[in-house]
View 1 (cartoon, rainbow, N blue to C red):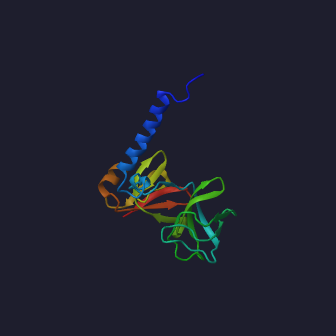
View 2: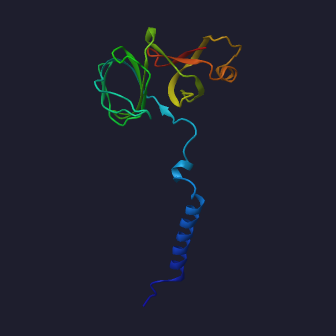
Amino acid sequence: MRQVISWRFVAAIGALLGLALFVNVAFADRESIAEVVEPSAPPTRRADLVAIVLETNHEGFSMSADGYAQSDLTMSLLDDRLARVFPGTPGVVTCEDLDKPCALLAETLGDTIMWFALVPMGPNFQFELPAIESLDGGWATLVNGWQVRYAPVIDRSRCDSPAESFSEFLKLVGPAHRAVYNLGRGAVTSVVC
């Protein structure tokens, strides 16, 4: 008959107990391990849906102080689509009057909005966004972590900068500019300082 408890089994159990004791001692003064690995930068949110919101059903809609939708929000978009934000969806609403056209930026998974932002619509189907931090693979990462498409050439004529390239512009100007998104082009096409 074979022995049930071997020295290898006892060593494995001892190793697991030792690891548990180490983790407990290492994080004894902290509330949780999640607090230790919490990112210092804002989360990256890729806006794969950018559209004009023509009309909203926002009765009772509100956002919590920590940036989550508290109730449903249904939006009619320019191309006759409906977009719906469910309670608990993270987002940002800077468009103060939801009865006027706003711009919707959303990260989607299929037809579901995983994250959204409603920003005020400007003239000529354009709206302003925070400063660009970097450009990579067709996506501009903004200082707040949002990612939006950018045009092959970004107009810098409204900023007084001697920069010859956009990467040099970012080094010289830093976050002292705002990106301008053009809905007709579907990309950031210019910056203003």
